[in-house]
Image (cartoon, rainbow, N blue to C red):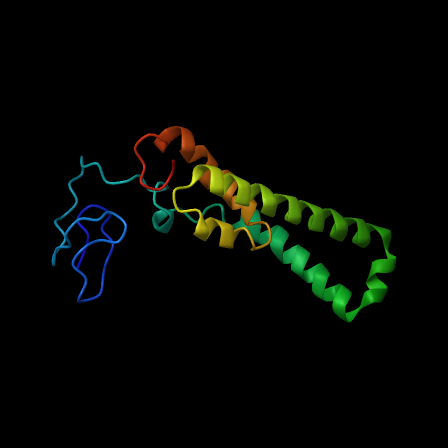
Length: 145
C-alpha cells in the first residue's frame, strides 16, 4: 500500500496515510516529469549525501579525542590537544542546543531532529541542508513550517 501524495510505503492492513491522512493505493502512478513532486531536499529521506563529511569529520575527530582521553590521559598534557578537544566539545554542545531550538521553532515534526541533535556535530548538516530550505519551501511544505 502506498500514499499517492507523499509516496510512502505502508504494510498491509493500513488504509490511510498517517502523515497526509488520505486513502492509500495499491500501485503508485508513475511520476510525471512536470509534476509537483517534492524537491530532492524537501523530503529528508531524499536529501543528497554531499554534506555528509561536513559533520562526519569533526565528529570523528571529537570521538577520537574522547576515546584517546579515556585510554591515554597522558595525551592531554599537550596543550594543543586539550584546547582542540575543549573547543570541539563547546561547539558540539552549543550546536546541539541551537539545532533543537531551530527544530522546535521551524519544523512541523521536530522530534526526529531533536533526536538527531544528540549526534555530535549534526547541527552542521542541519544548517547546510535544512536551514536554506526554509525560505524556499516555507509556505507549502508538509515538513517545514
